Length: 121
Image 1 (cartoon, one colour):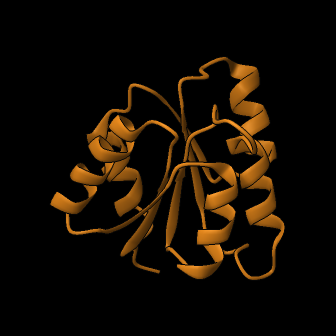
Image 2: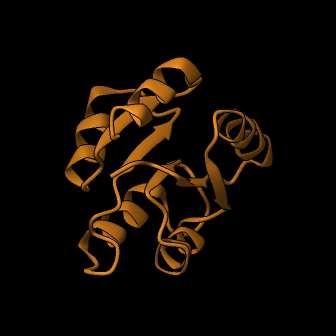
């Protein structure tokens, strides 16, 4: 399934803007959320083709939001790539156990991220 619409989830306005700019320049439609709770809601209402999920956020964190999204029948087919500053191997393992499709550590290499997104097509 070609990736057209991407949900960018991050509590940092700077991170959301930077990632959105890169994605839009490369032809993707971008929807943003600034919390795990908002990500869960927008995953249902917007039905994005892919979710880029931060982990460290107030309230529902990215691990919890990912778990909720991948376990819901309405959103379980939306791949989630966790994009976080948490770079320990145990963090990666935990992220993948929550149902993430992939895991990237910040600062993100935008070329690598774009390659990962293109690989879905």
